[in-house]
Length: 325
Ligand code: PCA
Image (cartoon, rainbow, N blue to C red; front, side, top):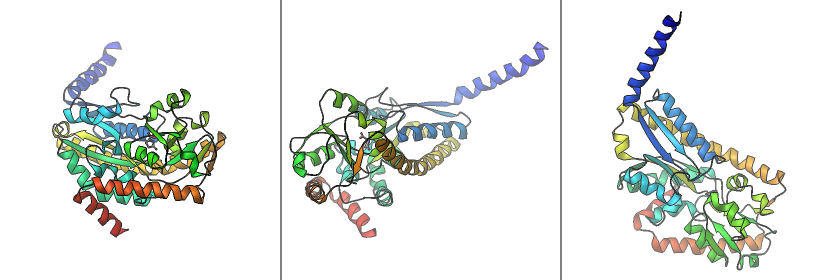
């Protein structure tokens, strides 16, 4: 009895060892924690890839900056130390001002526009990655960015000296333009930044506010609809080239599905997170006229500042995007 049972077990083990010999195992790093819809999406993507390739390609996702710090993710993928990564696209603005266009005010203020902006900028962003031996797989927008404070933001004077946590350089510049004191802080460091008194306020989305339990530190969310910045998922080109064609196709196909699913998750997470903020006692409102005017002026300044840094190609792409709107 035991013998007849043992045979298929041994056979199965032998087959999986043989398959394992050819299978690729990739390491992927993302700065965002497991509570983020982006992380849920990328984990689903990794599962889809494993399933579609019968385990020929396994992607191990290390979330929350646990394996590689945010600023090191792109260099690590470039070197091939890890095969895949996800970053907040606009943190790459030092590489090229094209990476900033999704954190500029007045460019894309809805999911439809944000997606159109992604499509318009994808070719040059892909070229940028390709020139460094990498390939973007997909990008997904965060919900629009707003302002978290521990008071009702009804007067732009309140920005004066306010210590505001920002997720990238452009948002820091924006805070500066408003008269505040910006600090760049990773999402995962938000709770510490508030609890140690390093910041009084923050700019981010409903999603991050919810994931970081903003109600522990602040009471008001001003839904300013500043911009809808994106995360980008990308891979090392050499690692991709080593895969056989069928695996490459399965990977790209799963990436296309992850992109579509991600944009939908973002919308849903925005609604669910706004509800969670309110359920936990936060007040959500839109800017009054005075605050809106101050945000507009700070935004205009940010935009002209970008124009002085952007090259002709970036400006032209933005112009083309605008003409199509
Ligand atoms: N959450 C991330 C990026 C933008 C967002 O909504 C953050 O605040 O770090």
